[in-house]
Image: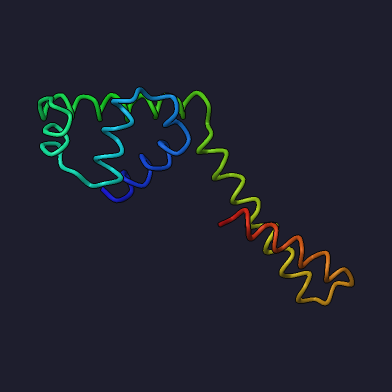
Length: 115
């Protein structure tokens, strides 16, 4: 369940602006504020089933956006490449590479991106 919450959260980070106001509100209330379907239904003035349907369709829509655009996948690949670069810079600095200062700046830049 936590993995699903994290994935929906990341998908929301990338594709939230493509959602309707109601879809965004349901995702925020359920995944970010941890409200139950009943609590969301009461707040929005709809049935619990309606909230469930909105959430399911919204998750499906975001997965479809990801299938078409691959932004989440690209981010993961970029982080893996940056981690490899970080490891290479660490190795070069440990070996006493003559360009230590430029390597330190590069390492700091990579660290900022990875965070």
